Each structure stands twice: as structure tokens, then as C-alpha cells.
Length: 326
Image 1 (tube, rainbow, N blue to C red):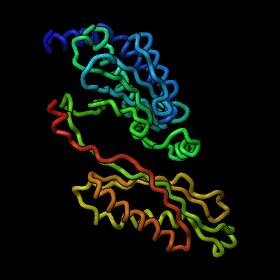
Image 2 (image 1 turned 45 degrees about the vertical axis):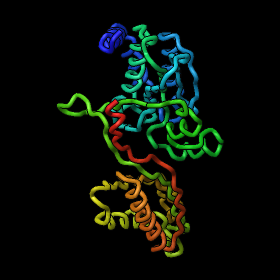
Image 3 (image 1 turned 180 degrees about the horizontal axis):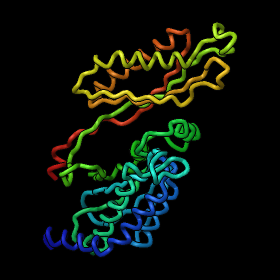
Image 4 (image 1 turned 90 degrees about the vertical axis):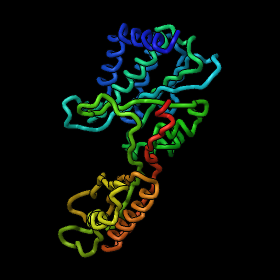
């Protein structure tokens, strides 16, 4: 069989199984879950691998997630086709669940696409025509959220890294993979597809501002306001934005996850989660130093203390020309 014949058979198999592929994507959409909580999503994909394609499945590849292998006995390189499982938080979305989770980033489409690729390759009967192996992976925890929950998982020894693919690299899931491919849904306007995109990397951080409690009405002078420290710290970072190179596309976007305990007390325990993003590693490191300096200065200004915990996020995505050629 030549390449065009193979492609035609694969596409026909995908079209012939259109309804079951779309149903799997719809099942994912109807069951949104945050990272490292994708137990139902893992089950949906695992059942599809087993029941529709007759594949053996390895579950829990990175706490959650699963993997199926094809052409295991064929000599040659291995390509892994990936799809991401997790949802994001968008509580005002019409389809969000009671936790605010929804597949507004389109990962349910990725999963359907990965399952569609698997369906086309297997149900077309062309695997024997291929000169290598193909693995299919449903990967967890792409979105870097719920850092408190992931900290707990790490403390319990259930994960090492907060990102699912990082965890998979750490546990050897990609050791025998020569090339990993996936796609992401995006509104590209009049374009059908974009290959080889680039994007920022980031350093994650959790920040704790430590003040001193006092009665906010009668004795605020006896307290140290940790919320003021956090607000000053954010403004300090804003004051440094002109020092970031335009080409580095630096982004700093914090959220305050705890602003104090009760209104009547001077806030003494204020928590923040944040990313420092940039297009280059050097830009990430430079911006991160400035952000930490600004946050620390905010604490120092009011006499508070600060604890900054750095978390390995993701490196920038760079265009790999030789892979795009293939």
C-alpha cells in the first residue's frame, strides 16, 4: 500500500466511526474534572481503548491518565499521540458543574481527536503496513491550577511534579518514545490549522504574607497588615513592567487565595498563587527575580514577613523545524 492509500483507509475508518468518537468527546465534556482528579475521564478513555479498539490499557500513568500501545512487536521508531484530560475553572460558563469546572479549553476535543486517530489506525487494519509503533496517551494535569491540592498530593508521595507531562517524564513514560504529537483546539479565524506554534513558559509560585493580628477597629496600630503587604507587592511588580523586554512577552498574574480570616482582625495570613511567564528561559529568570523582589519589598514596607515557594512550571514551547518537516 502506498501512503495515499493508507491515509484514505484511515480517514474512512474515522468517518465510519464518527458517532462513537464524538460520543466519547461528549462524555468527556459532560464530566469535566480538574488536574489529577480525572478519574471519570480516565475511565471513559480506558473503556474506549478496551471496548472499541481491543487494546490493553495501563491506567494511572501519572496518578491519573492512561496509555494503550499498538504494534508493540514491530521494529522501528515509536510515535505517541497525546490528548489532555483536565478541565479549567470558569464558574460563569453555562456548562460548568457545581465546582466551576468546564472544558472551556477544549481538552475534550483533544481526547476525541486522539481516540479518532487510534480508531483510524486500528480499525482500518493498516497497522501492519507501518514501520514502527504507535502509543496513545490520555495525559493528566496540563492546567497548572489548585496548587494547594497538588502540594498535598506531593507531600503524600502520590506525585512528584505539578504538571502531568512532567510527572510522566519523571516516571519514564516517554523513555521509549521518539516523537510525541498532539493538537489543541483554538479559534484561528480564517485559518484551518496552525503547525509549530510557540508559547511562553512559566515559573509557578505560592506566596504567604505573614503579619500580626490585632483588633482592626480598636487597635490596628498593634497589628501588621499582611493584606497591605500583598497589595503593595503587586503594585511593586506593576512598577517594574517597563523593565521587561517586549520580546520576552512577560506576564505576571497573581490571585489572592486568602485575604485574612475575619473582618474584625488585622489580616495576618494572606496567601497568593501566581505565574511568571516569558517567551525565553532567560526572560523567565530575569522577570522572576524582579517579581520576588517586588513582593518582598511589599512585605518589608509594613514590617510583615514573606514566604515564597517556587514551583517548576513549564519551559517555553519552541518551534522544532525538523519535526515540522517530518
